[in-house]
Image (cartoon, rainbow, N blue to C red; front, top):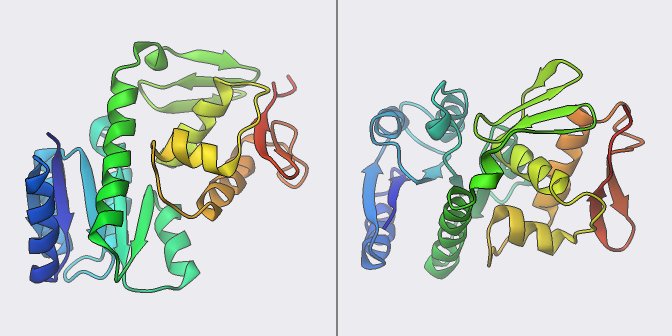
Length: 236
C-alpha cells in the first residue's frame, strides 16, 4: 500500500482518482489548491504525488518547484506526475524541467493514469530494495552519492532534476551498454511505463548540458544512431 497525494481543483476528478486508488489498496490524500498540497506533502511525505498544473492559490508548477527545492531528501525525491489540460508541448517540457517525473494530458483514461502510477511506485520500491544502489561511487571526474542524490564533477556540485539523476546513475552503472528509448522508459521511469519517448530525449539533452564539456559534441553520453544512447567513461 502506498500513500498517494492527489491534487486537483475538480472535486469529481479527485473523487474518481481517489476511488480507483483506494480500490487498489492505497491510502489517498487530497488537496484542492496548491498551498494545501504543499502543506500536506511536507507533513505526510507521500510516496507519489499526482499534481494538476492549474490550481488556485499556488499553481502546480510552483508546488513542484518548492518540493524539488526541499532540504529533506525524501520529499525532494518523491515521484511527481503532473496533470495538464493543455496539449501544448511547451507546457509539458516546463513541467519536466522543474522536476516532474511524468505527465498526463487531460482528458486521460483512468487505466493509463493507474499504469503510470504503478510504474512509479514499482521503480521506487526497486530502488529501496537495492542496497548497493546507495553506495557512493566515482566514474571518471564524476563523484556520485545515490543516498544523498548528489553529483560532483571536478569538485563542483551539479544540480540535477530527479529523473536526470536517475538516468545518469543508470547509465553509469551500465557503461558501454546501449539502451533504446523504450528500454530507458522501462528501466528509469518504471517497468511497464507507458509514455512519450521524447521524454527521454529531453532529459538526455538536459543531462548533457551539465556533464559534457561541449554538449553539442557529447563525449560521455553518446547517441548510437538508430538504436539509442550509451555512456562511456568520461575523459579525465
